Image 1: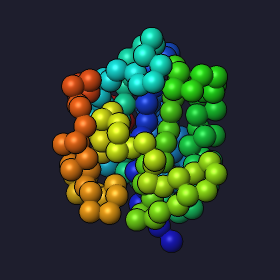
Image 2 (image 1 turned 60 degrees about the vertical axis):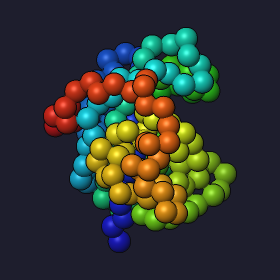
Image 3 (image 1 turned 45 degrees about the vertical axis):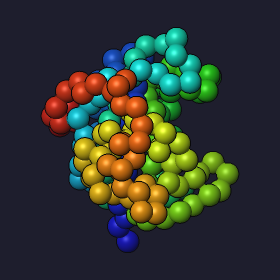
Length: 165
């Protein structure tokens, strides 16, 4: 059975653009069909603010991976690309988060869907709304609705969609 998932990607160390490209390539090589890709956005860090700006994007994939397996794949890709988890919200080579998985609501240790902080994060909501304005991030709340409720001043479009080709 094929499911639709939305993944957030971010990087703020090393070759940020190449790190994002590599993550998308590895997702494809692992059997995820990428069906939509947002533009890239240059964003200010959240939480730990004394670090480089991020490049962020959101992609939509068709996948046969179940939610926990998809999370495991994302974490494996992060490790393969050099991610080290040292400081919460600190600098990172790559971050790949599962935002949404079909219309599933899931709350277990290590995986909460929809992503629990998504509605607060303009750097996720802006690219998500770009690729699917009407996707519901909570019952009755679309990505577009959520963008209207957050401060987007720290989110600047960086590039066109050709970055992931």
